[in-house]
Length: 472
Image (cartoon, rainbow, N blue to C red):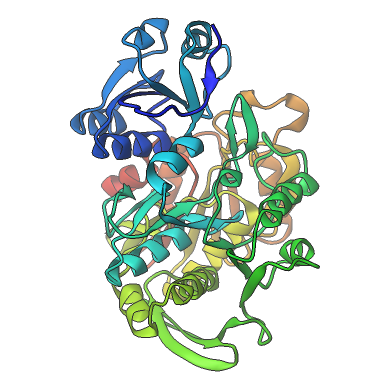
């Protein structure tokens, strides 16, 4: 039999392969809330995602097995972590089940007849998406959303609303083993935001030209019904937009852009800024997130909200009550006057901007930057030299050995030891650590009242934040 990459009519039972990922888990919950019978399977079934899904009524099979499909689901959603030799992927082809990718399912079941608001770019997607979702909620527009982080205002990464808009974080990662294009290419957004274009995801993209080619495809799909809001301080975006006739609005710091920050002031805990729109004062705003990059994220969300008819007053109210996203400059605790902050930063640009953002909010003590390179890109030597220029504002730098280095060919591995050597040559106080325990011992011995420990990693980092707070 032949299976079909399509979504049939009258679907009632849906199975998700690799259900415990952030996006797939959110989709499973949304489908359950929409009234479907939902099952899932995964190799790594453990809390909190497993218990959360089971609490929502999603039955989870532990491990991948042909038997998991024996009950005959009407549709199988295949996660992008699933390989074509996965036992369930093999079986669905053998017995002829209908299947689709996560973005196809999201488009069909959740977006449907709503207008999609899509946030794309190398940096800032999660924060900008969450800001826009909260603005829509405060405006009474009852939005739906699916975002790649836990929104503290909602205590979740998804929501099904009855309003006409759905906010989506546009992931540039590939879609599935049967569809290698970026996920965001599946959507036809009413409004899209493009925050930045840099080389990242070395396991998916060959080089910067390959990344730009993908974003070019995305922009070329736009019609006169679509609106694109694009950052004005990015040469790669400038290249991509040259000669394009799309409805484009630029935002950032340039006075000839439609949207720009005319004035900015840090008054802890507030990051204050004034916005100009087409040369006229639009409004004064303040957010609790530090940094120029977060002002830019807020500006993008402001431009999108204005496009939907939301007033400056409502936007200001939303920003003042916006709580942020877990793992985005999240203060995990303060012990004996030492503040421990958790951040997802891993790309050199994100590491630099995060450190720069934190410094003015904590001007008195040491800023201790703790970095774990663990993404498929940061564990490669692609950014070896770039990383040596992003810790300038930190007083003390702790670099961990990448924890999964054996996944990378020996010829291409990032060297934490070399990074520390390069930092020391520049006069930076930097140290290399083979494991997390050694970092904890060092930081506890070094940190004093008034200091800030900024931990940057896209992983759990052996629960370093809680362990530091316990010992401090």
